[in-house]
Image (cartoon, rainbow, N blue to C red; front, side):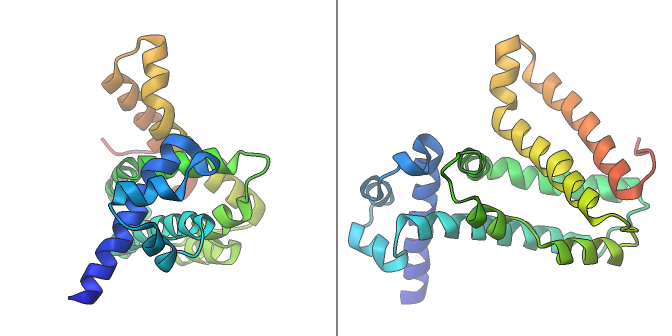
Length: 206
């Protein structure tokens, strides 16, 4: 019972921190407000997390852990040559990222700051080169140029999806576009590009 209460308290603090970081950025966030929103004593916050930096780091680590669990629960049954299986996996991961929109916003904001500790963000959120290459090889994908693989994976796969989830709605409002139409067209293009990258062949899921 105590363990469950402890986990609940810790999760409340993490959820509140995500809200505050998303609204005010890491530098503008105050532990007093994070604790107040979680309805937890500030001393309890420091009991679970020794600093604001550790709280931020835990948010990123939890995001990566949850993402990996969802991906791993599905990936063993995915044939990279089966367009519709890849489609299902993509939709699963995309929906997860949408639910974690505030976390993505925080990570994007902090990663582009000249004074931010991007080492923490990258080391906590991104796979190592060895793991990425190994996973691709295990799925039958040839890896001749690891640098290009990592560039494609991050700048053409992860970043566009995160940017659209975080900024797509406001971008569409600026131009007066229909929100659902914008989402549909983005996903159609993004899925095709992602599939061609994974399989090295045209996307074909009707």
